[in-house]
Length: 289
Image (tube, helix red, strand yellow):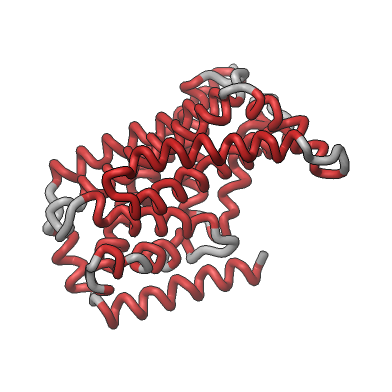
């Protein structure tokens, strides 16, 4: 764990050096001050909707926890995951669900299924980019085919070791239409999140939403790496800049936009996370009285 934390800090320091040499903090300040407060506020609203949809997805899988509680838990989980090093914030999800009476084994597989649907949704966005006018058609077909293949793969897994637990916890979601529903909620949630990012920085982005979409997708995919920079700093921005050739934007512009997007993500998740944490603390206090 100490090595992972050290590497996280090292990645962030490396990014800050590259950012300083490529963009410069003065240029970043100019870009930041050029943001339109109205666009930023509307972008935050879209991010809020995205977070609500993710909470609804958790609620579909675990009915024992109501929507409001899941919304608060989801916000705190994202907040802690964004600020704690080496992805240690992920553990907060299991801790909070355990306090609500959800067994660790159940919460683990539910979490794994949600992450799988996130990955499928992001891959659907990325490869759909190459189909241009058939973008939506591709995302729908990609989801239908992926869920169908996963359903039959799980069905034929042997009942041994961890595979037995996987079948017991996930097969019901794939036998019903739940898995497909989870996929499309993930797609819609990411769509609102990406639109929030785009709206926030609309005055700075030199192209349309669809053109910069691959940058948003790869930046989000970077979050599933086993090691990230501190608060995602570095891995998110480098991920954002990787598809810059597809979007025909310079490395300087993509790093600048990536950093601004990341700051917006951290601030937005912090606002929702801190408020949600206070509400959960207040709720626990009332229960103890």
